[in-house]
Length: 127
Image (cartoon, rainbow, N blue to C red; front, top):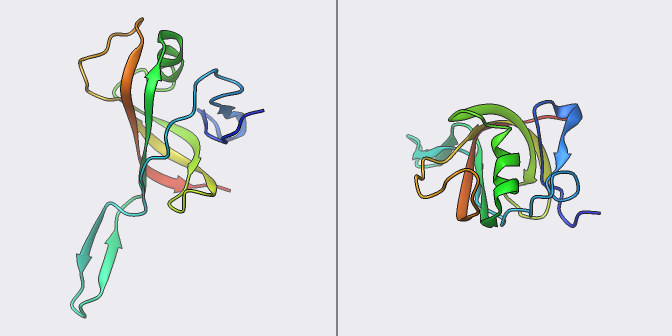
């Protein structure tokens, strides 16, 4: 059984655990941003605004792991469901998210990659 609860799927009822089901090592805990931007209000208070986002960073993915993740985002972006660590880095949440494939041209499909980050934006927590 997996030590981590990271999961991904195209449907919230059919999500697969990265470790147990997909054979992908879990990402490093990456920043979970609770809002996209912050600004000072007229009262001097700070306000957070915009959609939450997070990143999954992998030190290493072999060609099979990379191809597995790519099936969820065959283009530049795709709507997916993920289970990921929340901002407190101790609890997990399940979210609908926009998965954004990196622009980095230093990798090629069919080969292993290092230092690889996938971005998830517009996170909306689901029950």
